Amino acid sequence: MHILHLVIPIALGLGVAVALDLMSAARGLLPPGFQVPWRRVLATLVVAALLAVGVFAPLGALGEKTAAPDVSQITTPQLFLLHALMVATMGIWFLLGFAGRQARPAPAPPPAVEPESVAPPAAEFGEVGWLPPSVLLPDDPPPLPLSPSPSSPPSPPVPLGRQLAAQFGFIPPTSVSREIGLGLLLGLGAWVAVLVALMAVAGVLWAVGGESAVPKAPPALVPFIAGLPVWVRFLVSLSAGVVEESFFRGFLQPRVGILLSTACFVLAHLSYGQPFMLVGIALLSLIYGFLVKWRQNLWPAMAAHALFDGVQLLVIVPAALRMLQGTGGKVAAFLW
Image 1 (tube, rainbow, N blue to C red):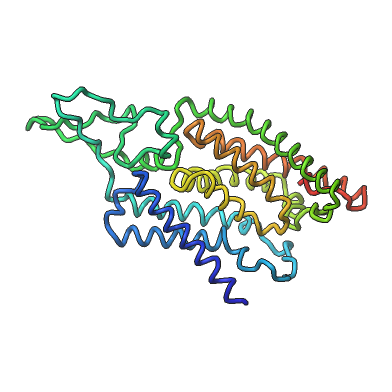
Image 2: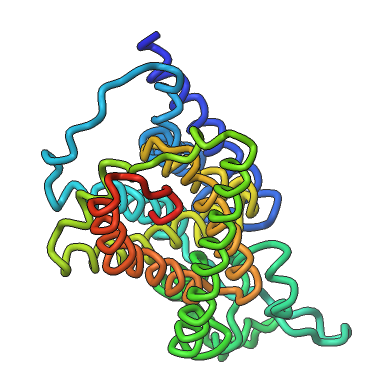
């Protein structure tokens, strides 16, 4: 059975990575560097490795009884290891796709044809994701004419940093501060909505005699993190909001869709060992996913995610643990 611990995550990771590559090509989001076969294959393998380790690894051990992990041995740097791997994966994928292969502005249509805007209207972005590599942003240099005169200098390629921001959803339609403020406001609403939904689900389970499905204690990792210094909990919340949203909503969602990116996000949290928690995680992921689709950038979702985790780790979990100690351990898992 131990061979399944490797086969299942590797197979699923490779399958989703190949789907990511094929769906990117179908949506016109394949980087120009992937015209070189070895770049495309290597990028796919890097993404597959991250998905196997960080998303699908817990599936290999489903159905087996394993000892609870000793969270006391976890060091502070290890708390950020998966996030560091996500950043490295996105960085490698982007460099393989764009470094040395920067996209140039698309040529303008022939003079006889009614001129059209080079950049597609914002409403179309929600259908295909982020900007294709060859599409200019509104304030980019003007495109080359169809038949440039000898005296016309060639337009410069789109800067690599701007390509990165465009590909991962960091360019907002308004100011960054406004998008973050909107995300904080909606994040509070999402937190309340998810908490109410979980309480309702827990109430239904208790009413039909399925109270055993509602855990009475949090996962071991939750109180461990809640007991760390405030600055560590703050960094964990900030890192989760920025990195996880960048990977699942900025990188995966525009290329594979909301449902598959949400499934990956939920499975990445399976290691907590409490299926009931996955209901809330799935609801949050869908909220963040549609928020990104609506606003066409990551800033609101990052702010909402970081706020949710911050409220949980800095306020709710410590208070719930104190309540847990005072009630003999009978506190429903929706408090986590």
